[in-house]
Each structure stands twice: as structure tokens, then as C-alpha cells.
Image (cartoon, rainbow, N blue to C red; front, side, top):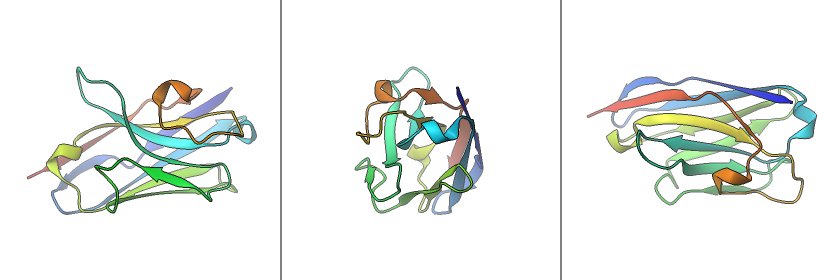
Length: 125
């Protein structure tokens, strides 16, 4: 089993930045791609960004491209989401996810095997 714990959420003004962190524990060597998703109340979980096991490939949702950057530190079993130029519409709960397959870098929530508990990001206008 793998446990994921997010941190770094909070309240910021529009235009400012936040960095989310996700720590993997348990059997972190068993995971490959890691991603960030977000979900507003009553809505489906939305893809934000994903990064391959080596860190060599990254993908972003169009809504965050150019503003958010995903990265990972495999030595520390950490993945990060640097969020710049935040907008009020970025307000929601952000989730870290990890998957076991070494062959894919998925952008669909149901392809991921492990999830964190989420961290709230609130952007005021």
C-alpha cells in the first residue's frame, strides 16, 4: 500500500502563488506516474497535471498550462505543484494521486491507484 499526504494549501489573493506538496510513504517504490487533480463540490474530479516516474514527461490541463508546474523528487518520495498567477476559479480541493503502471502517464482519475485526502486552495479576488 501507498499513502499520499498533501500539504501547502491555503488562502491567497488572485495573482499570487502557492506550492502544493505530496509525500508518498508505505511502498513508494511501487508507484510511477503521479498527478494532481481538483474537485469542486458537486463536480467530477478534474485533471490538473501529471508527471512520469522519471520526471521526464509532464502533461497539463489547458486551464493551468503556463501557470502551474508539476515536479517530483524521487529521492524524497515527493511530488510538487507550483501554482502561479492564481485565479478565483482555481479555488477548490486539490488531490495528489499515484499509479503503479510503468507504462502510462494517465490523465484520467480512474487510472490512478492511490489518492491523498486533499488540500483546500482558496483564491480571493
